[in-house]
Image 1 (spheres, helix red, strand yellow):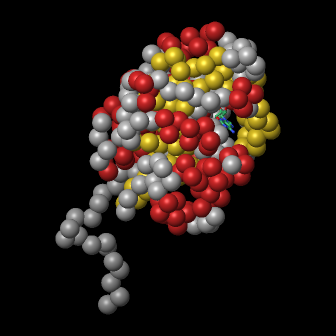
Image 2: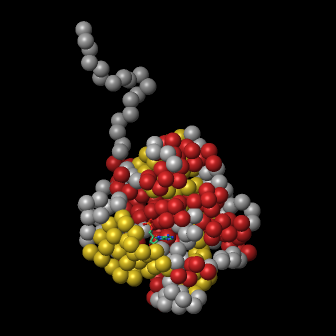
Length: 316
Ligand code: AMP
């Protein structure tokens, strides 16, 4: 297994401008692992309740995801519900978060899981993220983490502590400002990098992303879609494509990180084309590859040759 993810497996109730869904399969670890499974082997560590549907475990298995770390216990599965702004897909309001079985969850990694080279601490309680991190034996090749405002405000100290230990932080635009207590995005990302991570990826919804990697900065647009059905899971699907590419290529060069960011954006763009995991389950390799190729055309332009200058106006 090359990627291990710990995060939420959930039932989501969402309302978007395209409609609504109740108790649909979701969760940070779910979107991540399905997206990542296109590129590499993924093992999932999470907990669900006794109400978790058999067909949902089956769905993960059909993608070849190792579900041996998916603990089923007495109680209710984690539930999240949110509503998206009808004018702005980047704005959502959480209506309800019920941790349910997650409130008593204490993940125990197997020996095999402890040796996984790529580890993703998906959005979940930072104390759980830390407990997984402590169990990982040798330092993994890459340790990445995602979080959200719920934990930034609710468990700020624990979150800061775990962020110090990781290599890659995925974070939304508003959240990086909140975590760093800094309005300017570049300064906010740099401030977080000073505390530990060598890579910070700032996700800006349909405005694209900023990738800060050591001293370099990379920007990528979001794939321009005509219709967004449900933005839920875009960030986790992004992370799945990103880490899936890095783990599969086993290349951690700056160029590889840039490709990973673009592939992440491609996976996120498919995830939002339907509710829940519907589109990620139907998308084909050729569709993914086609969109990846199209991406490079989106912001390609003629660079200046070394001896060329801009066509300046002459005042004489
Ligand atoms: P994303 O849209 O990629 O940011 O993630 C959406 C997923 O995160 C949903 O499927 C939710 O089930 C899950 N989620 C929402 N709130 C939380 C939370 N506080 N902790 C863990 N997962 C959450």
